[in-house]
Length: 385
Image (cartoon, rainbow, N blue to C red; front, side):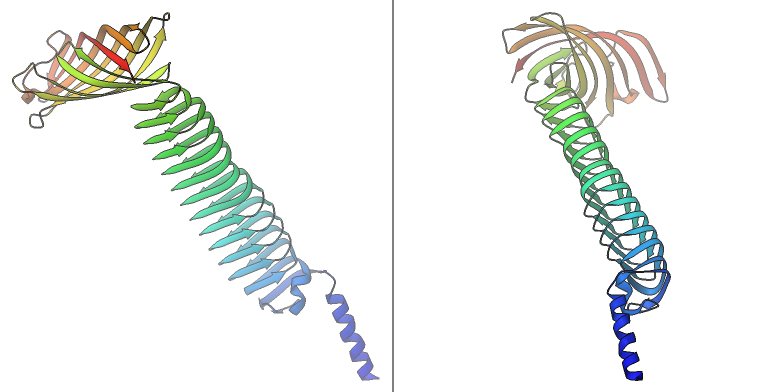
């Protein structure tokens, strides 16, 4: 009789365990040493506490594990593990792990990990990791990582090194580089941005690369695009734009070979040359930005701002900041003449010697440095490349 009762209870327990069960509180040391025992993976819990590691079917409100938590299906609320969280289905709320969070389904809320967050589906909220965030689908929110972020589509990506996304609606911000296929917003990086189609702005410390840009590219050195009306850099390689190589001379006798490159609206200026009018030859470098003001098919005005330096590498540096208006005339398709007035502010150490700005309308000397404002002019020609 007793034997039959034991067999009945055992079979009943097994049959019960084969169904998903619920418990208010689940407490354990490491699976299967817990109040839900070997059937813990079939339980949905309101709250769980595990000294080392725990396993469950679902977590409804709170789960704490010293090392790792494994939730086979969905997790809601606060999931905390010292090392690793694994959630096979949807996650809603906060997941905190000392090393990594893995979400097999949709994530809503905040994922925080010391190393990485990985989501196999959509993220709505924030992913914050010391190293990297990876979302296989859309991020509707923010990814913040010390090294890199990757997503199919994203709202905001902030990384210490790089961001990668197929489509970005919002902002990509990194200290090194951003890469996206389609951008509707802004890319800001310390070194480079790469995109196919841009509706917005690219800002980088060195280079921007894109195909079609409806907006602006701002770079410390070079912009490359098929189309861009507002490229702002020293060098702009715009396929449907303009690149001119020419020579010009200013009122001080400084002669430069200059590249003016950009769109039909804006362009960059970079030039090298020398001044031979003084006792010694001084070598010159110039960088600046320009704006085309069209008048008709033959005539336009170049509005330019530039900074020029002169030096023989021994007596200091002569610096001149200039604003100029240069009416220009096109001769044919490839040749252009220009000349016009300029307003300049110059400064150089008194030990430099020659005064290259003798027609000053204001000047003063202070602490061994000369400062002056003068009216001058620039004239030159250029050939379209």
